[in-house]
Amino acid sequence: MASAYDRLTDILVNQFEVRPDELRPDVTFEELELDSLFLVELTLVVKRDLDVEINEDDATPRSTVADVVKLIEAQLDPAS
Amino acid sequence: MTTGVVVTGLGLVTAAGVGTEPTWRAVCAGEPTAATDPSLAGLPVDFSCRVPEFDARELLGRRANLLYDRFVQLGLIAADEAVADAGLDPATWDGTRVGVVVGCGLGGAGTWETQHATFLAEGPDQVSSLMMPMMLPNMIAGHLGMRFRATGPNLITATACASGATAIGVARDMLRQGVCDIVLAGGTESAVVPLILTGFTRMRALSTRSTSPATASRPFDTDRDGFVIGEGSGILVLERAEHAAARGARVRARLVGYGASADAYHATAPDPSGAGVERALRAALADAGAVPSDVDHVNAHGTSTPLNDLAEARVLARCLGPGPAVTSAKGALGHTLGAAGAIEAALTVLTIENGLIPPTANLESQDPEIDIDVVVKEARPQPVGLALSNSLGFGGQNAVLAFAP
Image (tube, rainbow over all chains, first blue to last red; front, side, top):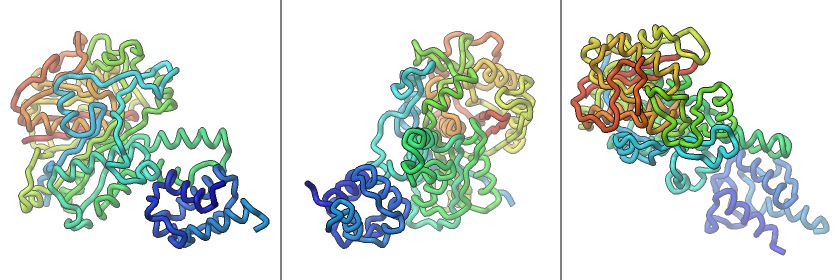
């Protein structure tokens, strides 16, 4: 099964027009030019595609990709 | 102190293609663009004048489809052409002296319809957070400001089918008053969506020639039965004459007059007396310091509806006599609603520039009650000294622009 990082980056590339070469765990959404409206949209897509609910306040433009991966992992594998 | 206002750039996106050149070519050839529209399948009226496929990501950036409703995309593409045509570099201009005025009748109709369907089917949590900034009609002006570093006055006009012409008139006033040196002015619309089509169908405004869509839009014809909805954008770069001269700009035409009025008669029907249109027309002439006999050409509103074409033609005959050569671009391009006045203003500039008056597409048998000189079959070579571009909007809002070489 694909990792949470891979699944999130797939969404960012395929639905938010992020270039693969821009992606690293420590890049912020701000650096990817994704503002707060896009972050709300991202939580919607993550819920729809991964069945993972992220609180809109937990993912901000200053969050890194790794921050959101952790939030996804916590729900995909609650034991972790 | 008033200043002259000139047109230094043109940009068009229509059902004939992306760019001024394919649009002018189709209009001059009298080529209709209406065709069966798969997005309208199953509706009583299932045809439109839709802009041919284009790659918004390539033209406007990778997030174009996430950020911009189609009405904004069309406007930005037209503006790119217009600014380049004017030989302007937004990186070096004083943005505080650059305004934006764009007409738009409906805004993001496609976004509205899609998100409303999502709301009903999947609930409020599934509605996009990007919906509002995509949908608001003023976003075309906002995004033009951002794209071109234009930080002067920034607004839209909404006078229904006259919106694009009203925008050009308002922009002219801003330039005359010295508020700006340059204004990006025009109109944009993309409302070819099932709900809007249905609304116009229910009010019996549209042609129902589904079996022969190409011939459906036939301004001034005996057998006209309504308009054909289209989409598109026209953006003009308007400039204070002194500013254009100082930078050695090519002047494509002068905007010498603008007149506006209200019928104050009915929500959708034009005043059959034509009094409102006549006031706007005479105001534009007076503004231009011209008399009726000076008018060589009229780019008519000419929607192909029974009421509009007769009322408008009667006004033209009464005010201008048999002299001016009249055309309507809507036979070729359909009715682009809030963009129409701007697209037709651009075509009027091209008519003056080329000394060539396009024919009215699909006009086979002129209504005997319409006693004006409508150009048919082929473009007519003719020098044009003064030309009017008429626009009439639902709500009784009229705007007439006057252009000269």
